[in-house]
Image (cartoon, rainbow, N blue to C red; front, top):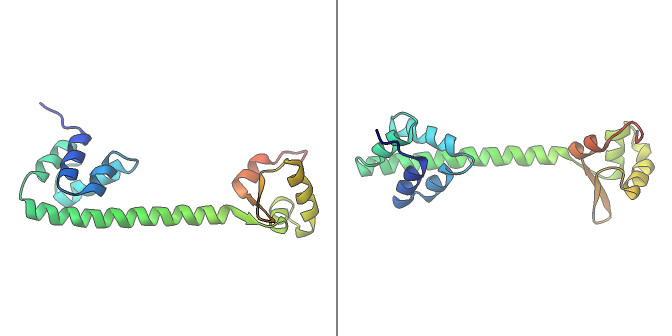
Length: 146
């Protein structure tokens, strides 16, 4: 029994002009693409079954591949939007915001300026503004800072 590798499916997709799906197969979303292809083509989520389905009734397969590309694009867009939202939720702008996060008091911003100048907390400048990421500030905290 000959086992088909994912790269053979990727080459077939690329040969059919489906570059997005072909390249995505060997990337971090490869398993998702395999599942989407299998579901759309009505076969098992195995490379050999998908490759066999890609070889038959070209017009019908091309239409299904367009639908898979649309679904995949929507999934990637949603994942990117969530990552962007998570990143913006992590960002603190200004010493007062950082002081509230670290000490629960915006009046402690002078302490933030001092710790920033000493390089003791994971803050950075965007122009004149001090900024910090909550995830980094949590890692930089120690009993002697607070």
